[in-house]
Length: 250
Length: 332
Image (cartoon, rainbow over all chains, first blue to last red; front, side, top):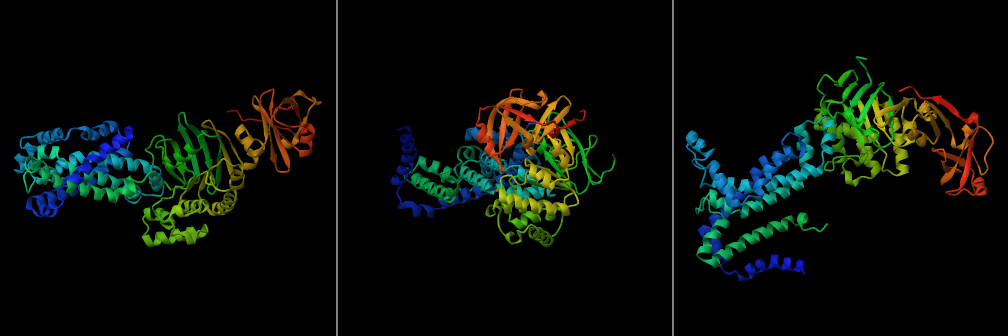
């Protein structure tokens, strides 16, 4: 019984959304400038977020999985903090660090005249901040499960660290890396709290799909529903692409 | 010893392994011992996987010394083939073997040529395009051995290379490997649980027990006069320890009777049969003696029926003095 309850609880809201949405408006809405902008920004920022995660998150995951250094467990704990941090708090924290008068942001403005908040860069930074832990944990797990044994064999065959990483560690962890990318991407696509706090909600520059849905919810609920449906469809499509990995019953 | 063209190790890993021995180029050293004796630790230490371990000198080079930083694994010339082959699952057999030459700077074409040559030598030349999961156990282990040798190692480290293989496949591979090892100019360390490996392949036997070297010598000597119970069981000998003196005798020299036999009390034991199993044409009877040690005796099936040998049967064992080889253990 409790299991059925949980399943119903998870499914009903989605069914309601699908049933309640005026499907006929879908195409007209997709044609409006606001929605197209929001979709474009969401697509761009989520792609950039995944890119950043791969570039800097992969080395961090490798470090945590393979190198035994003092403070490793502390570092891992710190990496996981954004995972449990309320997104709004993350946004406030980012503003304190990178805002106009922030710890880093103030210096940056003094030196270069650049400011970060309320730009598309800020959106990406906010997304990367909340998505990185998911990515790092997934990839670290992949590095761990592929084992240091193969790395050792590669070393005995004369391979240096970089060669070993490129030719052995990375190819073996590739499925985990892809899963990490999907997680980071989904987290970025749905991110709202940190984004709106740190980057604002300006149409055309920082208004992502979730921000647009929030805005429409204040006015036209129907439009908000239709937009939500679009995001749901995108998520289902990605889940479909990933089903080989996650929906397979062991 | 300042310069050694073969292998010279003096390992000191407190609590795990203390071992000192040397081997000449071309020698195959079988490493025997019970689980946890330090066999794998020895191989890992020579490979450099354990960091600072004491002294390891190979072919005139110092790989590890107490007063110097250990040479990196990739700069040691070791070839590894462990149980469970450890082939890279995402690379073809050919690319697995080519990995060593390629890592040491050979071009892709050269490496592939070297790899193909080694696969041919192990009789798996036509399987180069297959991934490890498409190979049988014996084929995969051949590829693993080819990969280890293709890197032109100075020391070849084999850790139970035949375990997990069918008996027939293992026997075949053992014969092949013997041939390759004869052509190999470096030192081979072969960890094994199998007496056949040790005595068919090795030129020297190193027996580890509880993290120390318990015995080393020529295979025949170690087989005839084992100093540890592990090796005694491995070669199927009865060995009794009496202080620093040991007495060894073959199971076939032991007589079984129901009544107390004549002769010296030192050469007869009462006890209970603990197991009876087939051993060639004879039956091997294991007896837990009242004095403590477990002894084995070979009897004919007829005799076993006549004596009613079954587990828990009370029996007497006796051996003739002339069948007992008495020798001393070197003072530790």
